[in-house]
Image 1 (cartoon, rainbow, N blue to C red):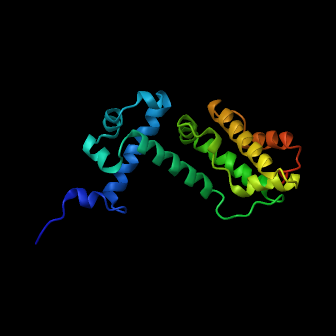
Image 2: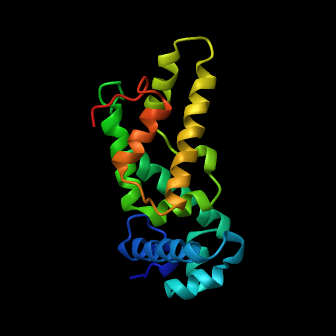
Image 3: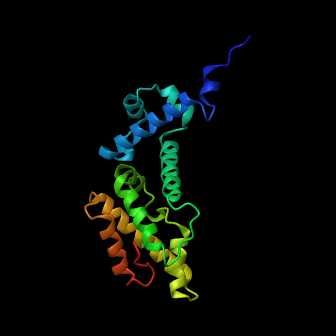
Length: 189
């Protein structure tokens, strides 16, 4: 009978122990980002806060940037999962965006992390929402309308998150209605 080395077991994606370790690392990272800039955080800081050793960290991530990228990708996937494969139309865009604002308000630390990691212009907005901005204008400059909508919404969300999400999700939806003069975003929420 032979035994399997621990590092092989730990690298099995669905291993419960590995999942717990990853959760500890991600939680420590988000906690540290609340009070520090990314450049001020070290692997040693994360390991100390997570209660793991450096070897365990490096079994899961190449370096701090690898962890930051993994965290951004996780947050983007979680955000896009809110919408699923739902097609966004003028009749439901208000409720979908209200769901987005509600999720952001309920998960402020994660979104602060997202923006702190420097993905300002890449906020994961459903492509259907961006396409709706273009369809409204129905012209050859659709890609410009999409970019304007994507960056405008991203900037509004960043400002809201950095301000502690003081406004309600309904108020945020109202701000979008005012910006887009209720032409793109249906008022059904």
